[in-house]
Image (tube, rainbow, N blue to C red; front, side):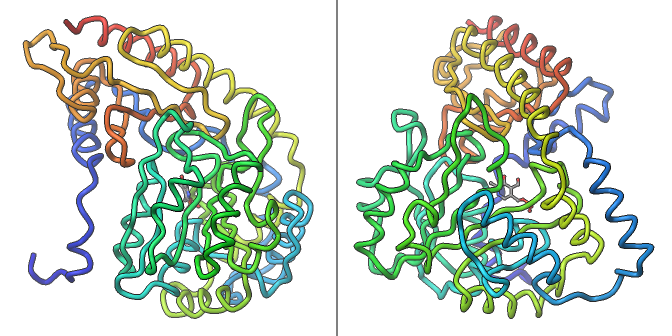
Length: 400
Ligand code: PLP
């Protein structure tokens, strides 16, 4: 309707909406739907974290807290950055928000003026471009193909920089590709940025703890200490600790930026849930051994799906370093004919065909800014994944 703001109108409807709607409709009609479209671990929040939340309720920790995080949680985050990333932050360098999402939204809201550009390597997490548009900026997407492991190279970055560039967004390991940047790749990127001292970097390390095959996580502020004053290192408890519903994300960065983000948050949501913050302290300071077990399960599921896709004619998929997604090419499917005679012309039509013919919901690559691909999340039960892979194999085999 016309009552909506011009700013909202810049946000295009997501290509996933049609698929989500169709999946819901098919499910209502009694079809067995396997949704591999959601980015959420199927594991439960560990018990010691739940216990800390219950204790917080009983202790009366049920009031407003400091806007951008309790001192307890900020101390736990400072320790986390120190122990895991070799980053030295003080409490004034740390911000806590309602999910990683709010922290990123705060950062853009606090810094972008109309026309400011944000470089976003594609494929990207769907929210980055829309958040930039909603906060008045201009997303500048840079296509990063499979030939560079879906990663931004120093030369591609150099070409995308203009006088209006305000931020570069990095996400490693990545949603949707699972690709992770090595420390030498980050050094190359930092070398370009050191020649452009006004550009800020937002690194989204949400999937830091979910990684495979001994792949080593690195983050740009640690790799290049000369960048520290202009890097916002974003992270959260949602994925690693299976806490998507608790809504806690955080970031470390320069104190003036952190303070500006608190100003934005103080006029929108105030603090994140006091109870969730207490739970996040337990997550960050408690035992982490469950991660090894869970990552082993994720890795088995990854390999199951990877082998299935790579032995299906028409599909081919790179092995991800981390996160819980496969981003598979379906280029070999495009142009082939469905049993009903219709030709599959793009990844959206392929995702629609899979859903209609097999009940498996995947997200087309174009939603993430790279067509002829599709994403699955393998954070579902092994049994469901096995069923999904065999249905996908059959559906591809039925094409002419
Ligand atoms: N960053 C990435 C790359 C994600 O995939 C997600 C969730 O899907 C988030 C951030 C947001 O996490 P949260 O649920 O903590 O807001």
